Length: 324
Image 1 (tube, rainbow, N blue to C red):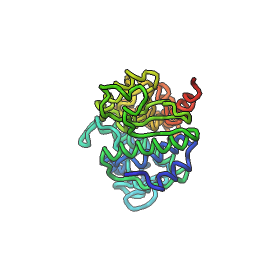
Image 2: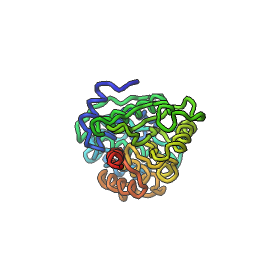
Image 3: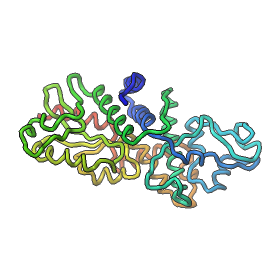
C-alpha cells in the first residue's frame, strides 16, 4: 500500500526530529502483540500498582506506563491514585497495545521467557507512547500487518524520508535494474536483478546502495544476489542496510555483510535489550524507577552496540556527496 497524504504530512512535520520519525514509521508498521493483556494485572484492595507488580513477579515497572501518559483503573473503574479501591483485574487508558517484537519467544511461552517478552514489549510501548504524546502526534496504528506489507511500507517510508532530507537534486530510486548501473550494464552475469534503493546526487553520481529490511532474517538470499554483482563490478559504491530488527540487532551491527548498518530506533532497541537481560527475580523498579532512566540507559546501550539511527544515515549520505 503506497504512502497516504497523512503519512507524508507526518514525516514532513517532523523531518529534523529523529525520535519523532522513528515513532511515526514504527507506529504505522508494527502489529499488535497477543500478550498485551498481560499488562492488566490483578490487584488486592488498597494495593498500589508497584506492590501488585512486585507480588506477581513482573519484569516491568508500572511507572513506565504512567510516565508515558497511561492511566490505571481498578476493577471498579476508579483511578488507582495511589491505591486500588477494590480487588480484581485492572485496566489502562488508553488501552495497552504492545508491539510484537521477539519472534524467538512464542505466544504460548511460560516462565522467565514470558516475563522477559512481556516486560520488553511494555518498555518499548511506553517509550513509543511518550514520543508520540509529547509531540501531539496522532496516528492510527494497524492491528495486523502482513509481513510483506510491513516491509514494503517501511521501504516506502524510508525512501520518502530520505528524499525529503537529502539535498535538492538528489534522487532516491527504488528497484533500478542492475543493468542500468554503469559498470554493471554490459555484464553477462548480472541478469534481471534489481537494486533495492539507490542514492544519486545532483551530478548523477551513484553515492550508495541501500537495502531496507524490516526484519534482518528475511530475504537474505535476494539481498546477496543484489550485492554480489554490485560489490564485484562497483566496489567504489558503499552498500548499507536500514532495518527495524530487535532480537538480532546486535548481530546486525557486528555481522552484517553490508558496509554500514542503520536502525529505525536504536535507543528503543537498547532499552529492549536491557529489559530482556534483567535476571529472574530482579526488580525492574529498582533498576529503572522511571521511564526516563530506562530511556537514558537504553541510549547508552545502543551506542555500545554501535547502533546508528536514520539521522546518522542522512548525515553519512550527505557527507558522501562531498567526496571527490
